[in-house]
Image (cartoon, rainbow, N blue to C red):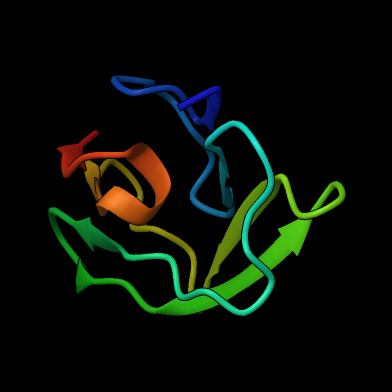
Length: 87
């Protein structure tokens, strides 16, 4: 993974933040990218995914803001990380 935001273990992240993944290389235009977002308070988090920066970056916008103070876990499938990975 070339770039992640927020970085794993980040603290004091605004509840309205979105997630950024840049795996390195170009993302296939029609591929589905497997990842799940789970909040320690809110549970499974749905949202909208957008490709950006010449199909090199994937943005995840949660449908609702994260809960204040919750820990958010992102499980990234092999399509993005080359292996199953939890951050």
